[in-house]
Length: 428
Image (tube, rainbow, N blue to C red; front, side):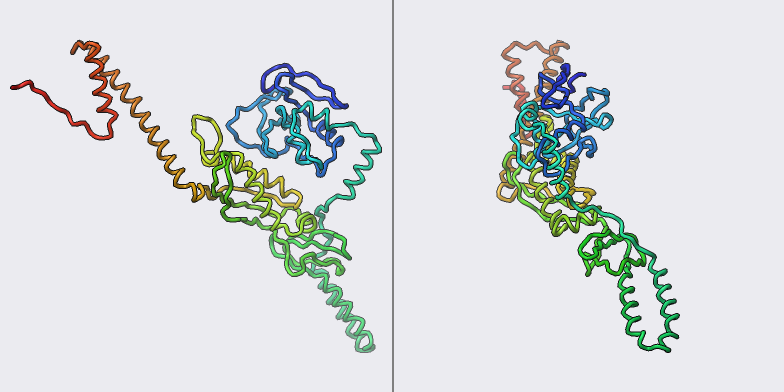
């Protein structure tokens, strides 16, 4: 197989019971997800690995690379500050030298040193005994998080009809034996506690004696176990798409210039159990994580960059920035069961303290570009004039006269004011 970066022949590298495809020239590695999971078993992880091959693609200016296994064009994905190449067909990922440690940095309990790929595997991916693995799996099981499950419910109208029939049937008995009424009323009231009404795009997380038993979804009239209590008794959990706007923030870009940035995030609750039980307040959580992701993304790009430089910028590559911003926020709020629909920059400007200086800088750059275009055009016109005069034998000029003519034409063409010609008729 060929290296997708430098086209060198890949070598099979065996380190600590791990087998990867390695390029000795650039240090990159071609790793299947099964091998990544095996590495995770050798490391002390604080959360489950995310498969880059399953992440959303982004558009960048970097040239696409070819999969060394199936020769298909690989996609780019943004992950934790790096852009890696993935092949969804092979379920494999290409890590440039140094990107492997940045990938695992998010999941490891102890922050690893940012180093080359080979050193990372040698230093951190140490084979563990079965006893160690068993203990680690027990710890992960103890620290497991809640996941949404459907709650058992019955159509409320069916139970209501049954209750009415029971009451009608019990009325004659109550007339004969009135002492039954104090026992019958509490039973009816208790059964009525199980009735729940939900509107469209609403849900209820239910618990029985503190244990989560499921989430009730679907608009309508429901009946659940009367012992079941809503975690949010005064309100329901909204499943609608919601908009987050944290206002403008002052952040330094890649060059250290303070800029004002504002974003909106469209999000929705995908897993109610995670949203309720894994974090204290999921709305505050996504707000804080959005701010953190915005700062992390903005500091990686300059506010503006010349088009000929080929470098991405906040102003010129809004689609790329939005894709990375969405991926970063989604990664941060995954534990809270939140799905990020979209994230876009709504406001982008230099901070007031440097806005005037930056405006002058932009104006100066625009003037320089305009002057450059004028000079290039003027030189071309002078060259054309001299060639036409010489080719048509209109006038023969020596070098001194050509120099004077070039000087006059350049001054005339490049001047900011219109030329004021002086006509000489040699009359005395």
